[in-house]
Image 1 (cartoon, rainbow, N blue to C red):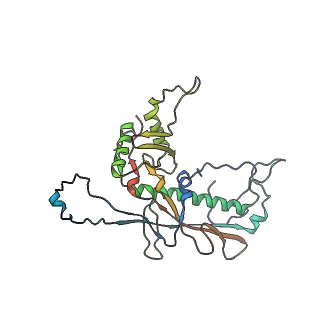
Image 2: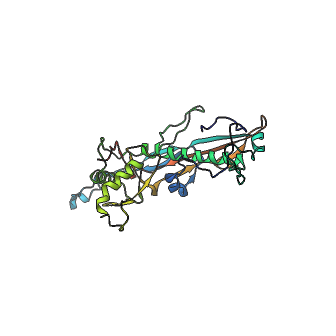
Image 3: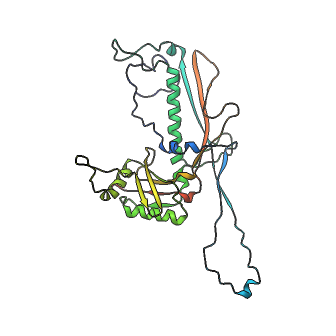
Length: 314
């Protein structure tokens, strides 16, 4: 059944007996992994780091005579990288009549049936929070950057795939150990330290990773068990964990060093962040808004890598 837009009533929010289920994925693995590192800001623009670089390493050739005069000074210039918080907002609206008819059931009923949702307002609020969490997860991975310069221009936070500049184009080829090794090496050469590197990928790439490394398993799990599930790769630069995310685009792999990633939240004074607030009454309905502001501190882009345009497994 399609969701509705507007106020929930007795007729457009039917109640049913039985256990509640949803086929819509609600897990948010990337957000869950970085949530404990969240910090607060009082400015929608925030720094993701100040960076500097060295000249190429070289062997000096300084004579004793030459050392009597100090060499020319080198000034190490810093640059600033930044991102923004953005607004996430939802509205919940349920009529008084719908709230009063929580015991009215539609569909199949029996002598032991009980309403699955005794409090419609709380149910709708929980679903709105789930939607916000899913939208944040999607944005933190796929978001494109936009800086507001007027009240009618939205801030949009930069997601990991946009932030990551170390990129390997598979050009439609299947994922192989050689392709992964090339991406690991390029990330290391760009400066990645593999402190807590995690691969985020969809189901297609996850299966391709397992296929690429399954020959090392030997398939000697037990007499009646077959198959493989590669959850970590030991690379020349450090271990890399693997996490499935339903929000990763098909044919794309993200390698993110989560040690330098954190959410940045922006509170409303006296209210906090992601709060539920009752709206002004205009009739016989309970109406609330859920409001929050959050952005992604992705850290230095060279800490991460991605592989794009991965083709189907051979």
